[in-house]
Image 1: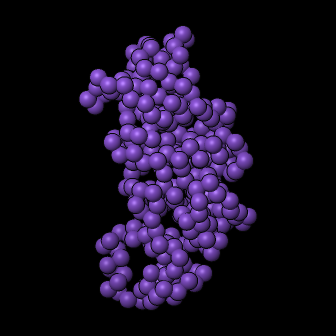
Image 2 (image 1 turned 45 degrees about the vertical axis):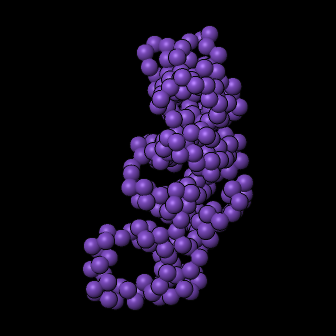
Image 3 (image 1 turned 180 degrees about the vertical axis):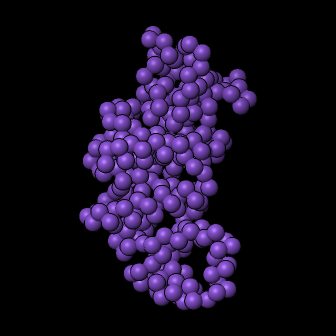
Length: 265
């Protein structure tokens, strides 16, 4: 058994017995790991506050083969304000479920950890609209995971026309002219049906915003504006559709978040 140190974000918590918790932690050094936090549910436990979802902490762990057990933890950031609003909490839960789904042990992914911390800070601060945080996280996460779409120009002709369609499964955009040419070709239509392609219309500003979230420095990922509600919806729909279909996975927390949104609307 060895002692190891790392910083990490709790993305999932499961109560175990009457006193313990099992934490899923995205760490800087070991990727996504499972940590047994013995006694962390008791009021006298020094780990009580840090052994919560969304908490980012410095850990000292016992490591034995493939098992990690909590020895000491020092809270760095709890993102406490997330818990004050059900919509913010639901969104944060969705982002954490994405991370817990894509993360793997012994495969540190610092860019993904930084992106998630950045998003949780933005949610907690209340300075940015949630649709913007969500869509920016989704597109940047897709890029980090190796699914970066080519949004700068039409994949067919190379032109940078304003009217485009996002071919979700191929990760490219197609201009309106080329799309019309493809639609006129019966063979290509049949191939499109067989490949179960997913096409998403992109408004010019929404496309520019999606491109920006992929290419910009992480610390400026939310430094863009979409004032038109239709552009906002287009941005949000395209980002979500792209990530979910690239991962080929449905998230229950996303369904819950949408339920909260529909209730508040």
